[in-house]
Length: 268
Ligand SMILES: Cc1cc2nc3c(=O)[nH]c(=O)nc-3n(C[C@H](O)[C@H](O)[C@H](O)COP(=O)(O)OP(=O)(O)OC[C@H]3O[C@@H](n4cnc5c(N)ncnc54)[C@H](O)[C@@H]3O)c2cc1C
Image (cartoon, rainbow, N blue to C red; front, side):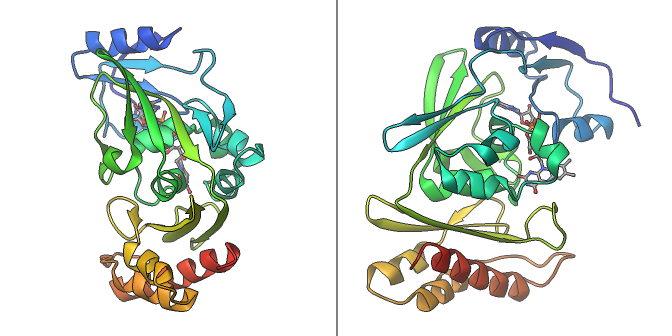
């Protein structure tokens, strides 16, 4: 199958993107790395009338340390996240994203906007309490990651909005564990532990339509419980559904193990 016809716009600035999306009246799509969008176009699951290529916009491919956080431009490729040293947790998570070819094209902004429930960067965004900067017809706004992910592949972004950067707080201690059936596959379960301002946060991906905070496990730790108790409580609170990869109980058991591993890596 081939893509349905579309008008191609190469944007030179964020303002160009917003104007082109506004002109498309709800039928426009941003093209970043293309690693998720192009297959959807080829299968005609997405049929935008206008495709706005953001790859030539300057200054959006930088990773900047900013006090107790790191600001990642929307066009930072997964491969660049993997090699940067400003945010070691992000580097550890990026290692798990697809294969080399996908990591060399896919972008941080695209991954967060695509909101795949099994993707790594949305879990890091939820786990660290990231904020997402967005440009749109009404100017610039910031969205807490917790308010961005609505459901599988659905975000609260407006049709004429573009993510320009994501600000990831730097954890004092962290751990990241993932299980996928084959190297490069999407995760069955991802678990993240991040201690930020003295609070241990646990986030899990792959068990719900959006990444979730495992607050039951966090509470166990806050009350002085052990890592094993926290992992058990956190997983018991998850409500995964069965799919062709395994039963709900399998995924829940996997989540408990991934949380245990992430806690151990964080030294908890
Ligand atoms: C075989 C394969 C395996 C993969 N494995 C993994 C994996 O293990 N983990 C993982 O996380 N991902 C995986 N991916 C997806 C990959 O990470 C993509 O790079 C990512 O999901 C989307 O980023 P992109 O830059 O390619 O976005 P695109 O494909 O260009 O766009 C994706 C969507 O986001 C929108 N968008 C893009 N940029 C912005 C922006 N700045 N603001 C607003 N909207 C925007 C687009 O309009 C589109 O709707 C895999 C992909 C493939 C093909």
